[in-house]
Length: 366
Length: 210
Image (cartoon, rainbow over all chains, first blue to last red; front, side, top):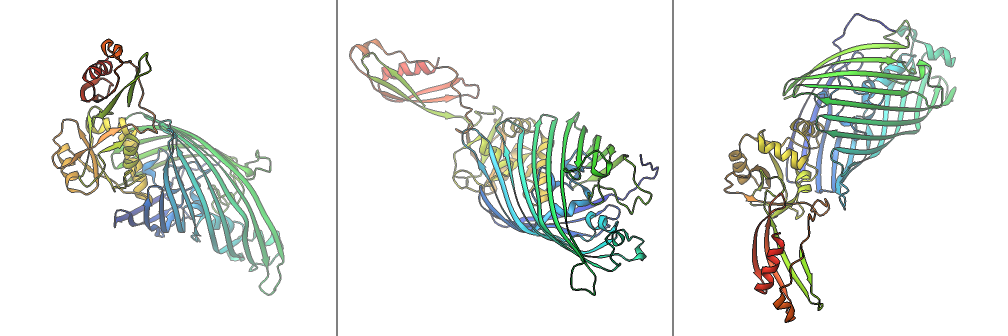
């Protein structure tokens, strides 16, 4: 078990938005967002979303610009602590450090809601395509840096669909999302000045060698269910991400690739959560989250899984101010490229299988 | 809605019932009001839910609408319970998720029935809810019906009209039209004969009042 008596305040975020209903059918808006999560974020303000939205009919609308991506129950609202019971969402599916890989796209949406016949409820759909924003300070880049690869660019094309069904059973929502990414990246094996030359040694290539990669296949399949009844809320999600990434390395003086391979992973993740609103001011909840870094391999080693048992309390001090206290009891840390909160840079003496964490979080909204 | 009566001679006596559901047919304490620019005279419960959840911004007739909320109180609670099926905290969180993703806006929320009525009266497309006893000058009251798709309109009991003997013996049949007002609990509050044979009408009225 990793132990630390030192707390950290490096988990702070901030957002502000404005929108205008220009006509009955057309609205525009934008939101800025900034966050500081240790090495990730570090107060680099960015446009979180900014787009125009034209709704032709209730069943057909379009959006264009930088748009939050519909993927599962909480992808597009994962930053909004005010909406959630949890201080930290289940990291199996919503890893804080991989936020930028799914949070938004620069492109367009087609969306709408269809009322189904014969008391079958409502079906909402979103179909989207666009560019995935670059994030030079995200978890993926940080994780690669931990093994001696510095990425100069990492981004690409994304398209997907989300279908959610508000069933005739009051409070029951079920849905499915699919997302396909085509990522390209360019990097360089880091020099000894960084102190990290692991990949350079493994590949038997000199520091300064160049790296290039692109997706041959990178698909997300996600299924979810939510049930709310009075103060009780139950939800669960399952995600499979299959990646087949072509990777090549070459020396700058050469015109041919020295090393090429396919980096293939098949990760599976799910969680189940329950929360109950005890009173206007207090909500209690628990969830269990499981992440298997590569489903094709034995999940039992800590290098191939992250399990997290969580107990949480949310106190709404006022209508605009909340506090959360949450205990995490984790097992496993996954592979270096799992990107679930464990990095070589922060753990130079290695990792142990168990990690407990106490998270206290507060937030305001106006 | 029709009441059909067969006589032994094969004659059909049909009582056509014009059912006028009052505005508080679903929620006895809530009246749905709209700006006069809204064309519709009636709205389904599922439409109300979709409008207030911002899943749609127009009614079935194409009229653009904008939901208006009350801030707390028994009417607000009754509206949430009867139409939206979620409590105020859940609703506020839902709106915030729309606002912070740019996919909707926080509806106007007002403190009193009078404020809601005043705002709805002056705002094109506005649709809101007030208590059934509120003064609703300058706005229109929308009748509320359960959507045919919701299937929530249920026949509790069926009473066949008694075919009057004197008409039966003279082979006299026909159609009558009734205007029936039904309360939210299903009780018949009023019946008015609009047309047809008065004797058949009496029989039909007696049947629908049982």
